[in-house]
Length: 223
Ligand code: ADP
Ligand code: 5GP
Image (cartoon, rainbow, N blue to C red; front, side, top):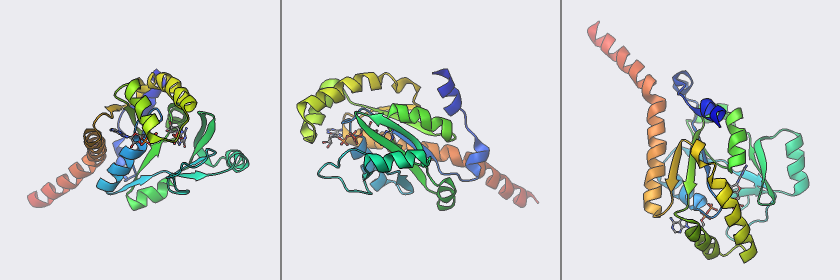
């Protein structure tokens, strides 16, 4: 996994000075609370955009097409793959999921940072395609709690819950190469942690720009 760390580590200030939007990748076992957390944080922090993925999975009762996912057929998905329209795509839990390529130029001009909700396979592919994404892994407090959340969510059969749990064990082994790990125990705490990470990364982005502007001001005063 060393190459992953090399790829995502370091800080390219030059690029950040140009105002390229930050890309946050959030992964977690299904049912951990990623959707809930991201929605809350987006309500509370301005300048964030959620990247709406395409999926061949059927919508859940509370999900809206174009908002939670673009729900597409297998043949439409396949055509999008052939036309290279995805930044990454993967098969997760028997369905296909793909991230449309973000319009980085537009993000830059709009000053928007983007959040990608993708699984660990997708994250590995995405970091080869985009520069310096910030990787955040969300953990459930325990597998027991994850099971309860999946059951309480009320959209999966018991068999599917078992399947998701066995995948969760494997998925969590990938958490070590992410930059940040947040345990989603109390939601208010997890919200504060995710907001803090986003704010801190924004500060890192603007560091050299601020120093440059300050230097100019000092020089003007001295002159
Ligand atoms: P994911 O997007 O990771 O699959 P969801 O956001 O759909 O997960 O959350 C799964 C279930 O867990 C939902 O019913 C949600 O309300 C609940 N949930 C999310 N975060 C918490 C939390 N911190 N404490 C208790 N329940 C939570
Ligand atoms: P769910 O069906 O519960 O919404 O999502 C199942 C899994 O698919 C989650 O782990 C989620 O992160 C992942 N996922 C959602 N969108 C994408 C995507 O565009 N690409 C990849 N690789 N995974 C995704």
